[in-house]
Amino acid sequence: MDKELKLYYSIREVAEKVGVAEHTLRFWEKEFPSLHPKKTGSGVRQYTLDDIEMVRLIHHLVKEQGLTVKAARNRLKTSKKRELDRTDIVARLKSVREELLAIKEKLDELYGVM
Image (tube, rainbow, N blue to C red; front, side, top):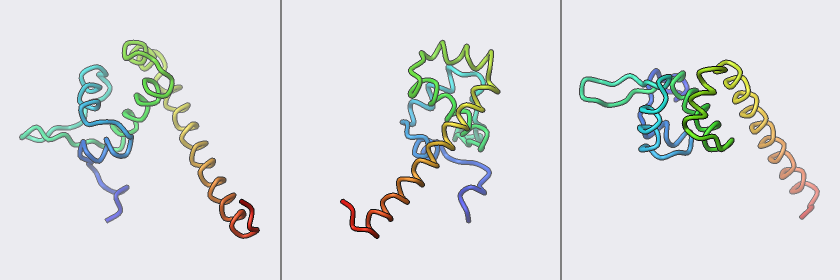
């Protein structure tokens, strides 16, 4: 089954996808009201794709832009849509950069450039 077709992701899967520790995700759940994964009766977190998008946005604000948790929370309150759009653009640009670097490597191999 294609992982992108899953309805729910575990905290471990989300932590690996985003590149943060599981305890960081649990902390962010407490600090950001907009991040609230579903929990089973036994307390196991189940993240949706929307939850993962929010985690990526929080990661971008806190880890990449260097905002404090309080500043990131305020920014999400005032301009969540704009921040989501920015994060999406940054992710797409990173993807394009990776593709270009892969193409460059292939060309270097093909033409023997070191």
